[in-house]
Image (cartoon, rainbow, N blue to C red; front, side, top):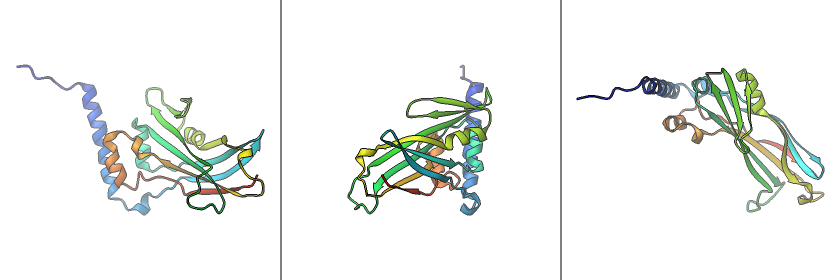
Length: 198
């Protein structure tokens, strides 16, 4: 009787995933304070161009060693940028004027030694030779369309808020359960705010 032998590719895949799972298990035993590296938002602002308010911001992505190892092992990481615009002093039940999410994915292509950054909204892709260059590009938000100026009332003040986080739900399925439990994967910025006055 012939017994099917596992292919080399299957064995390598199993070894890679078992290594990543071990990495996650180890990270569960490390104190949260040793792993805490928040994403940081700076330079959040908005400006009007031809009747439309556009947003600028810079996000510094300080990933943990666990996330960096996973990235360099071929695991894609998805970043979500949450943007909100509300009237200052708005009641809880008032709807947000803007509530949108920008999503980007970074993937290390080991064969070419490049980092691929994809804008998941439009599929645009860019390639970078270094991880640092890719992270810089990921964090550089310029002229993001917010809202038409005529939808805002003169004399009112509005609060623009932005937060960026790693989307654990977008990780490969075998990694998600432990990633939810590990502080090494709970990566996000604080909410950054800016007052917009039309």
